[in-house]
Image 1: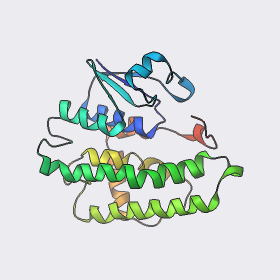
Image 2: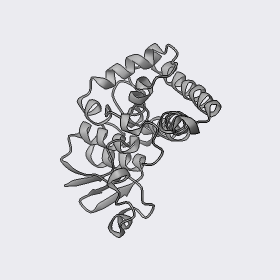
Image 3: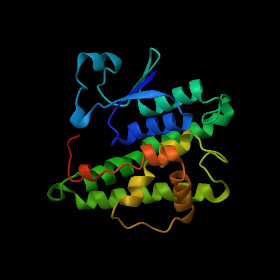
Image 4: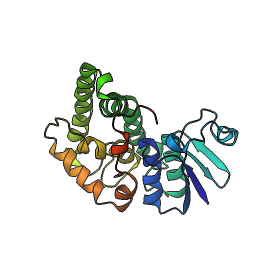
Length: 215
């Protein structure tokens, strides 16, 4: 059976569990990281020498790094549903997945969520947080424009691009921040919330992370 290591409050773990839910894959979740610890255990380091989650073991195939895991699961279990076998079809999906890691995630997850929400108020760099919010909004405005002619990032159906980007939307819309009106982004978020796997694995309360820099 598929095993998934990680803490449910990790955005990168949520991406993997969301896809596992969409694929309806029987699996075992192994809490690891944060208060659960275990990342420096020799057995875990044998799975991922970098000592980070998520990690999966799919019948002896071990994969680490969230987007590598997404691609693996979609390729092996998805039958073209979320990541096409045709390189020309999947290339734009890959582009948006990489953009989520190199542009959106540093702006939102690192700059805004970590810099603002998770950093104790006395330690916050208010200017840096404001700049991170501006970068986050600029990123999500790109997505809003893309959604002008499609219901999902990749087209008519959910893809890995939606998972890579959409996992961050729950926290973005829950934070007490100034958000511009991005109606297509908001409508997309409503479509994601209608999916059972999104509600179960992404819409996870995160209040215990406020003002807490340590995992």
